[in-house]
Length: 348
Ligand code: ADP
Image (cartoon, rainbow, N blue to C red):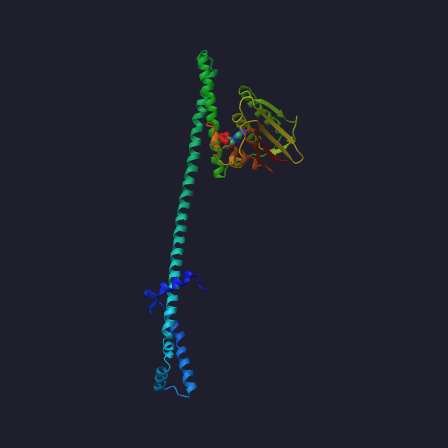
């Protein structure tokens, strides 16, 4: 059963000039050729049955005597029209296909150009990022040097309490700025493929204790209980101690940032058979399930409690660092409202 759509298409084609245009529509010739044998065969059989020869007079007489033959005589024409209509439908389909293909080619070209432009912009952004971060780092080091000079230089005279406070605040702010710029430098290195770790055989006990020491004052000040569960000594492991320091530092920084006063932060280290497992737990705000993977993306900060003090790069860089270690992986488990535990593991 032809579909209604096909029938309508056929009827519409009957009213189109293309259906009857023998120069453009070769289907008509095919139809006529297909129809020619029909009157020949039907009239031939008629004449044969009457025992008459196929002369023009006999044929004309036969057609007059049996007018149904007129219908057969018109068959080449009818077939020509029917095939012509099919040719029109086919030509329409071909045109549609060509338009469609051209559209795809155009869109592809557009996409290709947009892609090239985006890549170019991305490259420009990376160059800009790398240039700016390096340009920012140098003056910062000078300012830092002067602050430390003012704090310690005896010849400048004794500093008043207000002056000391101003210098302390400036130093804190500069340290924070330095931290943010370092993150941008790292990102720029990651993006240019130059981010590397210096893996050496090392005992991480010292590294861990150094970070913890840095934070115990901060936790105290923020009213957060701090607990460490670390073995007295750890097996030697292939790692970059500076970068591991950076990862633990980042995890503790986040734990401090997202835990209210009265909460608790725990650092745990487990010396396992084939790896060393680190854990930083907090009883802070926690993370919704749908954000657990996203927080490791560059610049991702959870909207509802976006903190002004970070760039959303720490975890992305930490992941990069850990995955550059043998068997390294980092992940998080969390319960909104109850707290989070960040784990990372490096192979022995
Ligand atoms: P930053 O801390 O600079 O924003 P990070 O990459 O370290 O960047 O963290 C990304 C985001 O992950 C944070 O902005 C925060 O939304 C979420 N996050 C990280 N650590 C914690 C945590 N301990 N508790 C709750 N949310 C966290």
